[in-house]
Image (cartoon, rainbow, N blue to C red; front, side):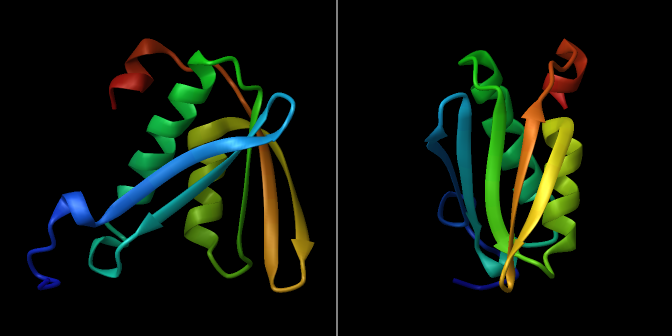
Length: 107
């Protein structure tokens, strides 16, 4: 697959799984050719909205400490206060889901 014309259906994946009561762990994978294009942010936004509708109170994720753009996206898209703790060279971030306005959900 050419990086100049990646195929969207093969470029991204996102899911949530129960982590503990009221908390879902989020996982995402975006193909290299699609990174830094807002795909992770869009996936995260959609996953967070689905979790809100299902009554999930918070999302948690684990990533490398250097993934500052992803950590920022979690803070912005999930919308609630969070906690971040180091796990060797990775970090686990848990953030409370807050209600979004219908206008935000359309973005």
